[in-house]
Amino acid sequence: MKDDRTGPDLTGRKVLVTGATSGIGRATAEALAGRGATVILVARDHDRGEAVRREIAGATGNPAVEVRLADLSSQHSVHRLARAVIADHDRLHVLVNNAGVSNPRRRETADGLEETLAINHLAPFLLTHLLLPTLRASGPARVITVSSAAQAMGRIDLDDLQSTRGYAQQRAYNQSKLANVLFTYELARRLEADGVGGPGGVSAVAVEPGFVRTSMRPPFPYSMFAALRTSADNGARASVALAGADRLDTDNGVFFGRKGNPVRTARISYDTALAGRLWNASAELTARAPSLPGHPETP
Image 1: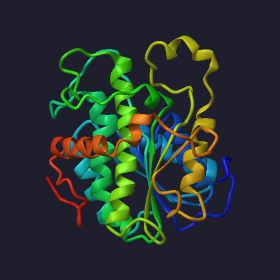
Image 2: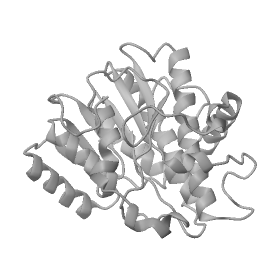
Image 3: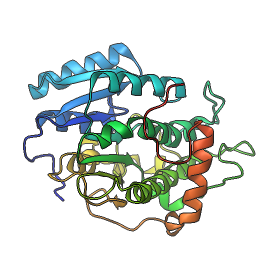
C-alpha cells in the first residue's frame, strides 16, 4: 500500500469524511479531492464548513466537494446526517470515521452520554450502521476508522464505559481508541459472516495517524512532547492511501500504522468475546439492533 498522497484518478469515487474542517480530516479530504474524488465534508459549523469547502475546491480545482452539517455528539444529528447523504447519493465508496475529541473534564452530551465515548466511538458505530446499506450497494467499499497508538494503553470497562465512577482524560481517550479497534475487528468479522466482506464487498480497517499537530489538546503526558508532533498531511497519509487504493475490498480487519503498514494492536483488541460485548453495549447505547442492519433506520 502506498503511503503518499499521489495515485490514480479517483473520479467517480465518493468519500465521506467526518471532522473534515481541520487537522487530519481536512488533509484527508483535500488529498482525495485533489485526485478527483467526490468528497462529502462533515462539519459542525455551517460557515466554517463552507469556507473549507471553497478552499479545497479552489486548491484542487475539483468542484465535487460538498458540506453536510452534523453534531456527532448528538445521535439525532447523526441520523439526520445519514438520511441526507442517502437521499442525495445512491453510492458511497468510502466512509472515513475521523472526528475525535479529548476532554480534560467529563462532559455529557444532549443524549446524556459521556462525550469522549459518544464522539470517538458511538458516533462511528452508529454512522457506519446507518450508511452500511449504501456502502454495500456501491460495490467494493471501505470503512476507515481513525484510532491512535493510545489504543495500546486502553482498557474497556464494560461496567462503567461512561466513566461515571471517576473520569481521567487519558483513560477515557485510550478507552475510546481501543474501542475503535475492537469495533473495526468485530465489524470485519460480521461483514465476513454476513457474506458482505471479501471480493466486491465492504472492508473495515483502522489507522493510527501518529502524533499529529491538530487543534485537539492531547492528554498528559502527550502534551509534554508537542514539539515532536508531525503535520496533518503526514497524519492523513494512511487514510488517504486506504481510501484511494485500487482495491477497497481487501485488508479486511487490519490495523495500519502511521507509515501505512499493517501492525499488531493491543493484545486485548483480539479478544472476540470482549468485542462482542462491546458491540452489544454500543448497540444498546445507540438504540441499534446488535446485528448488522438491512436498511437504515430513522429515529
